[in-house]
Image 1 (cartoon, rainbow, N blue to C red):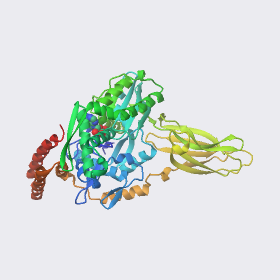
Image 2: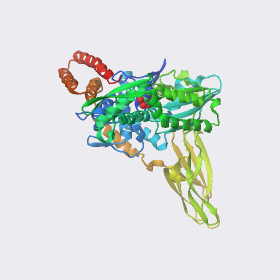
Image 3: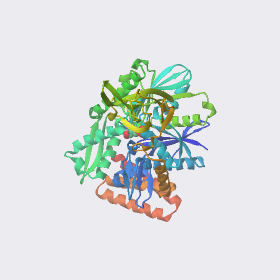
Image 4: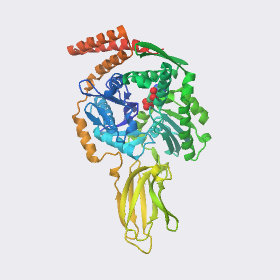
Length: 567
Ligand code: AMP
């Protein structure tokens, strides 16, 4: 059974396979390899995924969701029609759509997958990604860090010499920096750092605020969600245009007026300054965590659509004193590399010799109480056991003792984070250990943490005097779904009516017409409505060739209109 690879992105997702001729991207029903990570509800109550859903973000903002990757593993609810979903469910719908694209392409069922995640994802977010896979009916064989996948796509694993690379990944919503080293045919992630709340969309938001300023007044309160969605759409287009041009203008319908909004590259650079500043810290941290200096880096690899921005490239060149590489499309590189990893997992001959290691991207430890003076205790301190950027799989043990003589139990709390006090870190779980009542001495316990390549943590606690061991089951994690809940959600998703794959192109055209309607006035709106009715008539006629021709014609017509939105 084919093992597929999935790049489940904040903005776009891709699915790929490893074939005899190397990694290959699989197109969706619209023929695109990029499927927007957007989910919505059609007017008939079907679930729609991808481009059509993305188009409807503007025209049906209450019935459409995007950018939910940021909320993986949280209790945040997304209401779609009468049902409420979590980010895992919405991600599962994207995964299911990709799964059916792969099935149509490969001609057989797909049940096994590798999914890429930001290196910065914590334990809860990784578990949520596993859960999303299961809800979509996929067995997630393992998770791969996105920068590691990118390095594989660049074939860095087959470099002959000893080399050090930095992978800079600025996607829609996340920023990841990783340092990789190749040595004796072994590729090792030396360190990784990042910011889970920084991405290309923050640059788009900066433009939205600039456009709002140009529109004058408090537009955020006065604009309808649909109009605001449209403004965001235009801001994103303007940002992309600015990667090629010095100045860009957009036409926005504000009330009953078409307003021209303008943005120069210089203004864009000024308003992006705070974001550009935020890019620096993770780069510096990754370098210092790897015990390196910028001069030790041999190559810079760019990943993620937002690294196309000239200001980002210029900033990285200045910071690293090296020109970044972008030979492979930054939107495809993770999915291509994940497919190489799929080939590796399936022990494809061509990749037999590659050895790869990974790191734990954050520090894992426990809460401790220490006696600062006789009889005076300080609790709530963090004791790191596995330090961030330790090569995994890893197993570490520490010996602790009870705080007071005669105590009969120890509550051990497991945390993840970089702060010295546990209250500032993330609680992963807790375990109660019974210790024999010992009035003479402190009882000793060994705490063993084992962290594997898929980001799963096992905690074993052994009481030395009794040799009894307890194992931690991290099920009660805040925000994590239990196995029962995952199974329940899998059954619910199976029952949902999903818009048929073979009708996806029609829906995409309709949603594009509706989106164009939003940004037009008067006669043009009338004209678009007429086109919509005509297309509906052709659809009702059910003649495939007529439908296909109409779609092609409408698509060309829409391209012309969409082009006039931006100048
Ligand atoms: P990803 O999550 O890697 O697909 O990244 C998508 C992000 O990259 C979005 O915020 C896009 O607006 C942005 N992006 C894509 N192409 C460009 C471009 N040519 N210039 C600037 N930003 C871009």
